[in-house]
Length: 63
Image (cartoon, rainbow, N blue to C red; front, side, top):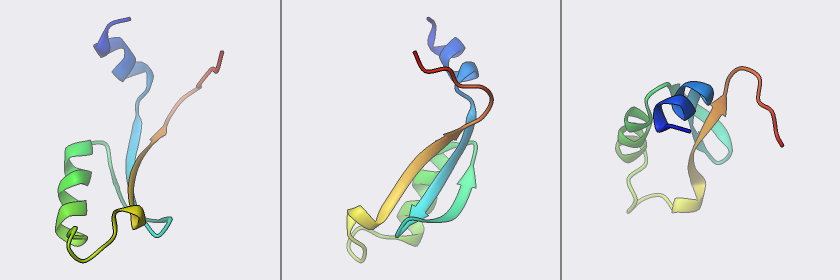
């Protein structure tokens, strides 16, 4: 399967989590990475408190 097809099939929103609470969301992962770096600099916050995850939209079939 082409990368373009996978991207369309697995569309959704990226979410930024801090201490397992949603702080922000976007359809652009680069935007989430930039926001995480600005809001939570590595020298002040441990890495395990900050997560970026994707919430998929549509019907997902697990095989």
